[in-house]
Length: 350
Image (cartoon, rainbow, N blue to C red; front, side, top):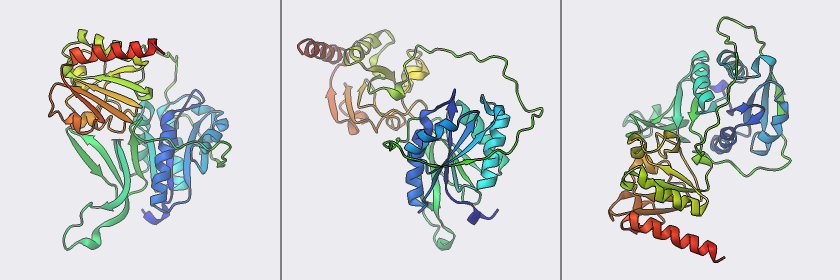
């Protein structure tokens, strides 16, 4: 493999039902940042589907300089084999240095298969990406073997108990799946245009093609915490599932959403869809209330980018106060209802 042939930062622009998924826009923002670090001029989005050419404008507004469109009836709905063939063919034809895929249900199925097919590595479920040297610290006497401008991919490991930084210095493209909600979208540039390249490697059905007999769309009654502007998050310190009622009341007064820590999910008090942290979801609300949450590093990693963090905990030495903008030491059973009452009164007096 000649590494010099591989240039540019590519992202897989996931679309479902002819609508660009939010993760694709987040990846474009990070791709722009990585491209600047590599002195690359172009960020490329790979758009795969059927009758999806109308979506190129959205990708251009969010930072794509070029959109490679693989448009074919075989790609109408996501299926592993045709999508793998499409994306792997793009890699072999256009030779990206970096390829980012969202760590969604689709991306977690697609990414590993593409990496295997093009004979490269993949780091899954990344929470941080940057360009740097590998090894991070040169081995004494072997400084000449340190490789520069490598994609350093950071992800939680061992159940979130440690953080690993991984590189792929000897193969290309450098591939990563990225957890939704971790990267930030750039401000869209209305009317921006991108170079559109139509590419079709051809599709011949084989015994790996599945047939979709029926599509059933489940409607979840659990809020998407990654989209919430105000989160009222509870931890083990709340005490019980029933006691989350006081958090529900506060969230209702603020027009916010309730979320929780891993300990709460492990105790069976709340569903995993509401979990914040390295093994849950990464969130960036305007205001994050951490109530009865000690502040373990695994949890903090999922919410530390919140605009304002308010912590309520009876332990004045809890690590959560190290990242909080405002902290209240005391009994949450007294503080939270009083806070809710004051907010309700303020709204009523408006």
